[in-house]
Structure formats: structure tokens, C-alpha cells
Image (tube, rainbow, N blue to C red; front, side, top):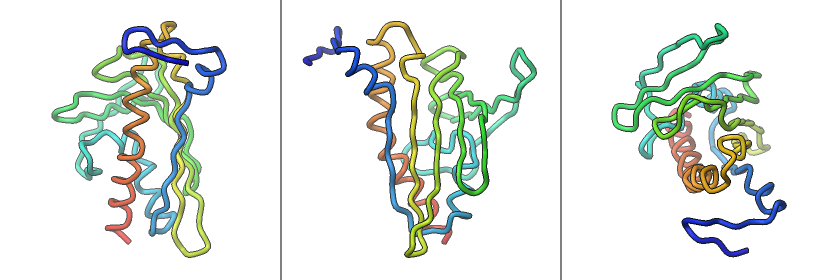
Amino acid sequence: MKETATNPTYTTAELAELDSISRQIDIDASAATVWQLIARPGWYINEGAVEDDVEVRREKDDHGCDIDVVVHPRLGEFYFRTVQQDKPRYAAYRWLGTPHREKTEGTLVEFWIDEREDGGVTLRVLESGFSTVSDDPAVWLKEREGNDQGWSKELAAGRAWAEARS
């Protein structure tokens, strides 16, 4: 189906397909090294390279749950809740807010580390739930568009970070 910048029109099936983004990348590093990366909430908030000295502060939400606030000097503050961590194979975070969106339940970002026979790993990411960001598909499709383009770049940055430490 055709779309324009101001009026995206999709079928229900097409919108369901667009509700998530899935990417993967092979990394020549150990699962333990890649775990050091994905165990950090918001490691993918950067400008093309994973930074080691990112400011992260911990806050409590209205229910007393821990929230991590990743503070980027130029991009702003990003809010995450750690949903689950299963060292060294799986980590999941919930976006709670960005400089472009108020603090609300956002997408779920999940990472899996799969060991390869050659000694490296495959890092997979699935970001899902874009339709929960807004009742208006044009709003959540715009947010998805930036993330769709960004995940390939962020996984490449993650690979560079991990391979530099192996």
C-alpha cells in the first residue's frame, strides 16, 4: 500500500508487521564480552560509537520501581526500565521516555546472544510494541522509522565496541 509523509495508509496486517523491528549481527567476541554491552541499559544511545563513560542515574517511578536515566550531553535524557536479564544470554528493557516523547510505557527492546561454533556470537535485537506509543499510526510509524534505520548502525557500533575488547 502507498504512503505519504503526512498520511500513511496501511492495512491492519501491514500495521501488525510494522509493530516490531528485528535485526542481528555476527560479532567476533565472546558471549561474556557482548554481555558487558547489552547489560547496560541504553547502550545504544550514542552518535555512532558506544561510549563507556555515559552518565546513567537511577530514579524511582511512582510505583517504587527502578528507572535508569541515560543522559547524553547532546541528545538528552532517555528513560528505561530493566524488564529481565539472564546473564549472559538475554536482556530486555522497556523504553519509558525520550527527549521526543513523554515518560510513558514504550517499546520493549530485547537482546539475545547466541554463541557460534567459530567462537564468536550472533547478537539479535527485537524492538516491539510501536503501536503502544500512540493511537495514531502516523505518530508511532514516525518513531519506528528512525529506529528501523538506527538498529543496523547501533549493532555495528556494538560489534566495534565488543571486538575492540576481545
